[in-house]
Amino acid sequence: MVITTPELSSRSVARPREGVLAREIGGEMVLLDVEAGTYFGLNEVGTRDWSLLAEGATLGEVVELLLAELEVDRETLETDLRGLVRDLVAQGLIDVAPDLSAG
Image: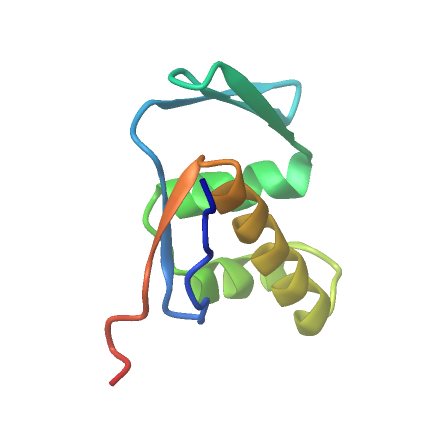
């Protein structure tokens, strides 16, 4: 099965997929896909990304919040966040809603 990543924009919304359990352990997040029996680990920044996305933040909102919290430039943060979202989609851990304002 091939999983394709939808086009990502600042208004895209990524949500944990049903059946994915998340547990923070020592500042890092462990994600478990109950159906597939696989797990995925996130570092501290990935854990913060996951938490904000799970709360309903758009990708753009995550970037703005993290720019205020971290010492990182916007381009690096956006690139890293999009990479994480693509990885999580490829692992079947999140679903991404397209930018519904486009068009």
